[in-house]
Image (cartoon, rainbow, N blue to C red; front, side, top):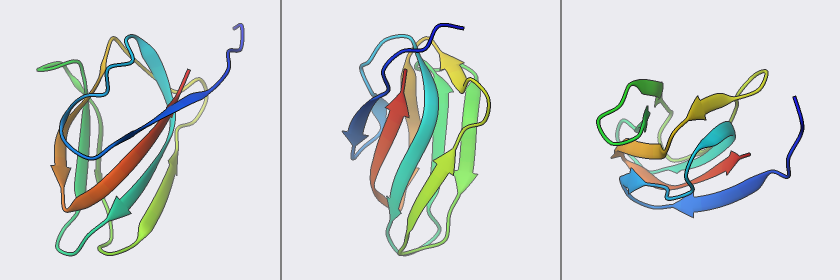
Length: 90
């Protein structure tokens, strides 16, 4: 597989990350109080590709193994008790 430069984008709400087709390689999450949860789907209404619960009031790093998660559009469908997320993709 040919390697590409990793890019990143910070988001603070649900919706499309607006980067087009991508492979998610890592996410950084800053959580608030309560029960933080992040759900990413393959486009709006697509299959769930990542669904994670986190500890409250902390920062978290999630590395995606191998070549990452391939999606047609990175879509954040649940952004519960999360302040911000940075997604790293190719």
